[in-house]
Image 1 (cartoon, rainbow, N blue to C red):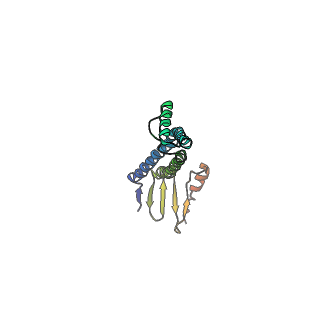
Image 2 (image 1 turned 45 degrees about the vertical axis):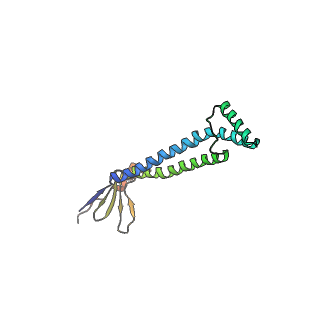
Image 3 (image 1 turned 90 degrees about the vertical axis):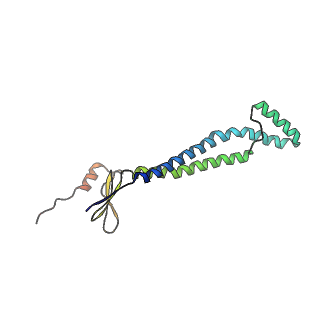
Length: 167
């Protein structure tokens, strides 16, 4: 008797949704690190330069208001100094790469597992649309059909079974 268990798509979709969420967050991190944060750099550098050159607070405030009006920047003091902003940009890249490290294996797992099943009879078999692996009595896998670099001729030769002779 053969028992067959197909891969559950609801279970696999969870991995796919997690991967898409990681990809979306990683793309946001890249957007922030490549476009949004570098736009804040000139304003932050100008304020840092002003802080170094002007010691008086009232004069610094007046000069900063003039610089803002002159360059068309938004009102207020920058949230981060240039060093903090550079560190922030690096961390955006680190988070994006972390998201890629999580999401791509999940997508690969989804693609490789979709359409697979496990079938059990006298000898345990792991079946896939593109091939079949047999697990022998000692528990090792014998790859009977593989699509990884083997020509069709070699695969066909492996699957040929000698004819049984009647005695």
